[in-house]
Length: 286
Length: 232
Image (cartoon, rainbow over the protein chains, first blue to last red):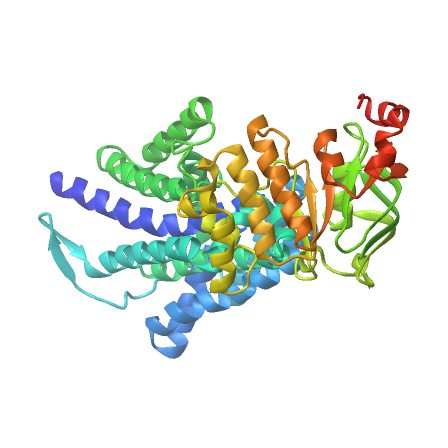
């Protein structure tokens, strides 16, 4: 029994780190552009599908892990310019717009890639003994890679000029404009970064999940819960909440089942909304 | 020279500027005065394109600003210290200072700036939100000066500042003006405005209703009382 608990907890941690990457993208987009991107899960789905397609075409997963975020970044720039920007600062309209985008992405993938779920072989095979269980090496790699990507993002945000400008625009776009910062360009780059992070999460997750046009539908609510529990726009809080939620769901699943685990997550989110509406980690924003 | 002609702007459907005209010549300190809500802040925001203009003309050194993206105006030499200081509280003092510069700040500018604002220099690694109100105002002015502007627009720079620091901020604005930078000053503190200004515009209901030198204004207390509601 202890083995199962460990395995599910570690699986939760692995998923938590991947979801943190995706939820972080959702959170920076919300924090900067004030939009709730309903299509964010589908950008993750595009990452899984794109990863499988590129890995199959080139014969290398490593080519896919490099190319997919780059392509997603370019796609994000185009989406921000032509889909998001025309509806910016109109909250209700952005939900409708991104919902439409979500439909288009899902149906576009179904029409071109097909409706059947597929599996992607992990690029690293084998297992390692971990707390008395044999654990997939690839899952450990995915966790470490996601953690490194998260760390790199925070270094970028806190140590580079562009990162500093993103933080400034999040706080006060008008003063940032008066200081000579091209706010529209910063917003475009931020949306593209969020898109690239979701797609990168998709490539990493592709070997440990099913790859199909609806993959993003399951991931989106989890990301939203992480963003709400962590505090809207609170990036560190989002990462912490994603990891905590995923580990908690893993542990609950070992005693009950995934449905009960999700109910517990929703109950936690409701509690946070009722008693700490600014998130569990309010005040830790930077 | 900054020339504003018949500038009009709305917030939503409410007209806030109904044709503002003013001029700020190089080396001049112009004060824009009026009661709360007459459109002083809106005038500055509309000049910078931060508030959508729907009529009139704004030109700076012969360039039509209405055709230039607002973020480019800082590079043309128009600096802005917004009402409430506009500090980014979670960024460090240093990050705030050099945010508008494209590359790393030139060493001579940094040195001169820190020599001029020693309190800011001492606190450069701190989050800007931890500074006092007066220090934040100094930071906002210093941040504007880093961009090497030729005109600075200051919106209520002494608002919410401890009285003993008001004189310090007033001295700093005076020093800015003395260095040859033109100043457009929105100020509720009449004493401060009249001390610093070389020319004064009075606003009411989104329009400039009176223009005078500080001396002429001091000699005409009725006008001051009518448009500002205070006695000299």
